[in-house]
Length: 295
Image 1 (cartoon, rainbow, N blue to C red):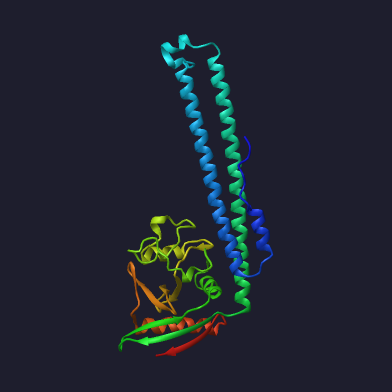
Image 2 (cartoon, rainbow, N blue to C red; image 1 turned 45 degrees about the vertical axis):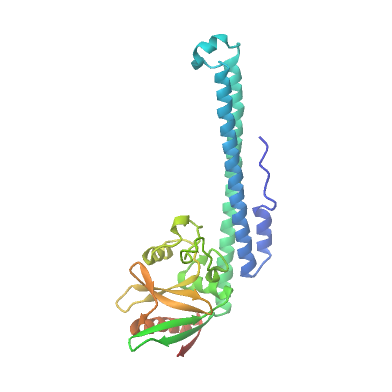
């Protein structure tokens, strides 16, 4: 069978553009473009499989209706000779088309997976080089509630800095460039989801509990489909870590700590000090620039 019509620009052409880039945003744009192409290619193969299945079903039905099969009973006595040969030849051609389609699909899938792997490796390399050459700037703002509780805000960072901080704090690259500032929702009755439905996350899993979100971030992998927040793991005095997140809220990010299945933004004094201390250690290690402001 003839090959399916390729996308206007395949994985090879997109990768050629990526190799000539040095900045993060165009690389992420190419990655998203490849995802769209990949989805469209899979849809085309799925439609062709369905067409061939329908064609085979129609052929068998027509042959049976003509009485060309032994199981057609009395009708077979009236059938013209050579019916079984016709059926076998037609089924053979159909099987050949299905086999060729499977070969084309496997080849296309391999090309896309290789392209995705190269883009992920390219992003990791560039992020690491950027972190070696520059330090993301963090402005931590303390808003005291009472003697025992505080709210911590972090001034909004840029899109490049958000990608760098995600890698620095979680050891993973975000699946999208503008993930931190995306407050879109598919259901206006619900808050914006905290994950994109990609990279293994199902559409019904985009609003996980705090515990499930932590498990996802701690699982092995290169990519995490975060949306609207940055994760931070802060060591506890007795061992282990607390899971904090910086939730985007307009001009600032609000620091929240995981508690059970949810997050809370009112931090105990010890929690707020420990979070600030963690950022201070990163500053002293030369990982970030930090400015502390008590209000």
